[in-house]
Image (cartoon, rainbow, N blue to C red; front, side, top):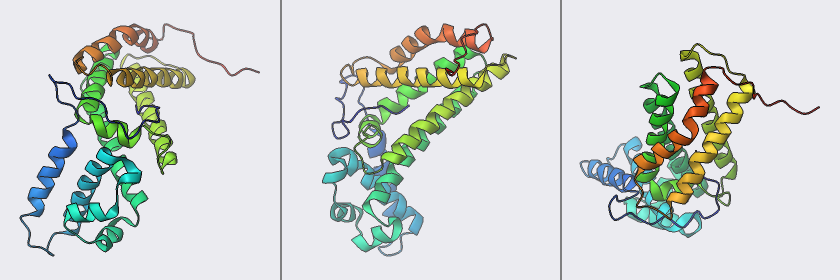
Amino acid sequence: MTPDTTHAEQPGPASPAQPLGTAASVDLVAVTAEVETHAHGRVPRELRRRQIIAVADQLFVERGYQATSMDEVAQRSGVTKPVIYDLFGSKEELFRTVMWQLADELADTLRVAVAAERDPAGRLAAGALAFFTFVRDHWAGWYALLSSDATPVTVDVSEIRRRQTDLVIDMFAEGARLADSHVEPALLEATAHAVNGAYESLALWWRNHPEVPAEQLADLVTTLVGPGLVVLATGATDATPHAST
C-alpha cells in the first residue's frame, strides 16, 4: 500500500493534535543509546549496522536521496565512510535497505492486525486502522522512501507494490476460507488492486488534511469497501474479470 506519486522529498505536514512521523526518530534515539553502552571500536557489527540504517533513514527523509551524503551519514553515525561501505557497499544499497525495512515493517503490522480477526468486515477494519496508523507514525518516511518512481531503486518500489498486492490477496483469500467460500483468483487480484488504490489515494489526500484522525479514515474505508468484501467472501458475486479474446 505504497503511494504512487513523484513527490518523494516533500514530507507531509504535521497535525497539531497528532504529531506525525515520529517513529524513525524514536528508533534512532534507542539505537544510539545502545551504541553508547559500548566502547568506541567495540560496537558489535549488527548494532552498528542498525545505527547506520537509523541515521540514514532520518537523513533520506529529511533531505531526499540526492541531497544525502555518505559523509554526513558517517559523521552522524560516528564512523568513517569505509565502515559504511563495508557494511552496505554503496549509497544506493543503503537506501534500498532503509526502504525495504520500512516496507517489511508495514507488511508485518498488517499481518498481525488482520490475523486477530476472522470475519471479512473485521479483517478489513483491522487492516485499515493498522495501515493508517502506520502511515501516521511513519509519515515522512512513507512518502520520502516509498512514494517516488524517481528514486534510484524503482525496481524495488515496484516489487514492494507487487508484494503488498500479494499480501492483500492472501488476506482476502484467508477471509474467504474462514467464511467457507471460494473466490476466483482473478477476482481476488482485482479486488486487492482496488483496495490498495483506495488506501493509497486516501493517504495522499490525508497529506493535505492531517487533522483527520487515522481512526476516521479507517472507518471511511471500512464503510465504503466493507459491504463489497462481505459479498466477495461469501461468494455472492459473479463479477469475476475475464480476459478479452
